[in-house]
Structures are given as C-alpha cells and as structure tokens.
Amino acid sequence: MEIMWAPWRGDYIAGTADQPQQEPGGCVFCEALTAESDLDRYIIHRGKHVFVIMNLFPYNNGHLLVIPNKHISKVSLMDPETRYEMMDFLVKAEQVLGRVYHPHGVNIGANIGAAAGAGIAQHVHFHVLPRWNADSNFMTTVANTRVIPEALEVTWEKIRKAWDAENP
Ligand SMILES: [Zn+2]
Image (tube, rainbow, N blue to C red; front, side, top):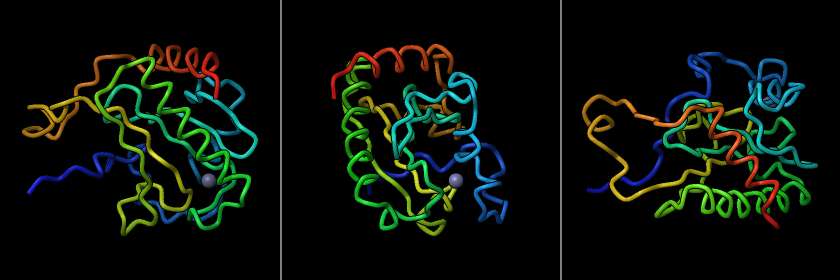
C-alpha cells in the first residue's frame, strides 16, 4: 500500500486543533488577514475574495495555503466570485511554485471538516504543496520530523516576488 495524500496533518499554529472555536474572532486565518504587515503573517497576496499565505509549519519549502477571505467552513459555501478567484489563485500558485522551486510535482487539495483531517476546520483552506521525487525522507519516516532548509522570510520574499511578476 502506498499513501500519497494528507502530509499536512500538523496544525497551522500548534494547539489550534484542541480549541473548539467557531467564531471568526478566534480564527488564525481571519486574524492573519487583519495584519498590517504582509511579512508579519507571511501573506503572499491579498485578492478581492481570496488570499494566499505561507503555511507556518510547511511540509516542504513553498507550502502555500489559498483561503477565502470570508470565514466559511466548506467549499460549497463559496459564492461564484470566490470560487472563480480560488481556482485562479490555485493555478497561479502552481505556476509560481514551478518558477521558483521547479518541483517534480504539486499537491493541491483541501480537507473539509475535522473528520477529513482539517487542522482548522472552521475556515476552509486549500494546500498547494510542491513535491520532489522521494521527498518523504529518512527524518520524516523515522522521526516524524521534517527538515526545512530555507527560512520562512527567504521563502516569502522569493514567492511574493514571483507572484507579483507572474501573469495570471
Ligand atoms: Zn476564519
């Protein structure tokens, strides 16, 4: 049996899965959107309905989250404009990561609901994750630990620059 999916079981911020929070007031994604500095929260891009942010606990360098601005828990709650921009940004994220990191593959996906593995179930988010052949390495397998060679600030600067340069 080969397991290919859901490498992002870690919480965006440690411990959030234990909090029975339902209100936007306690939501890390809603809270990130209120930040004045994009670098403070590693926001890559703010769209009209959707924003793009780095995962603070990435599986690999360049692990992005694409998130509706609105605090909604399911893709079926996205209005048509949000759906359109979501897909637009997922496409762009694939392009940008391709340009910056030249991955061998990309995972794009969302876990809807805690039962499906969502760490922050109340605010739907898509993962865009660059993958390399055999990137599930020794440390991951044996110690359940990832080795991320690049600092978040460096990643942010690279991806943001490429995002702003990329034509949709
Ligand atoms: Zn939220």
